[in-house]
Image 1 (cartoon, rainbow, N blue to C red):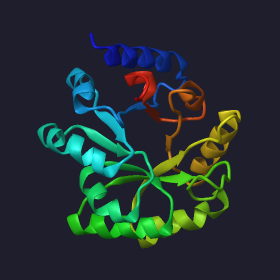
Image 2: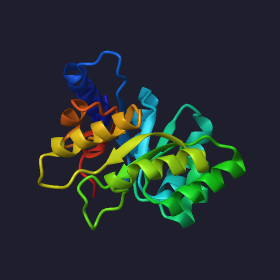
Image 3: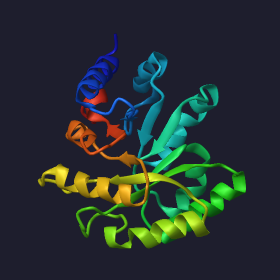
Length: 218
């Protein structure tokens, strides 16, 4: 059996043991950025359906053909999305995890309406108020969410964050869980290779796991 499949099975077992909510479906997004489609195929053939990329052009090159062949695959945009790439992203991806500005929200709304596609979206929160990271500040979230949903008619399904490095991630995860609850959103995209088991305790149900599945990137 391929190494990535063994790794995925191991992660699924760990999650099963940690998940205290039997009703909660936890989705593992295999973040396949920088890995070739040949390295990803064993997981696809095994039946895994959710994959993450963080560059639009790389995703187009890798996934366009196979997504046509396998319509049940879900492709998640987990990196920063530039407005000039939105048209291509909306066409290819099923989920966008990195909505971080009004300008981007308007562009996504415009492009999804053109092709009548109901793309699922997470609002990225700058949970640590870090200058170098993008995302909506938690104090601005209510207004931003209302504009996205009411005016732009976006399908906002949840919130996403990248916790600050070198600080206990549970501090960020706690704030995220509270913010989602306040908006009655029940999808949280948080938890990566280093902290996904911690994230589950705070109702994370979209885990973005790369190196723990595929190994170290070149």
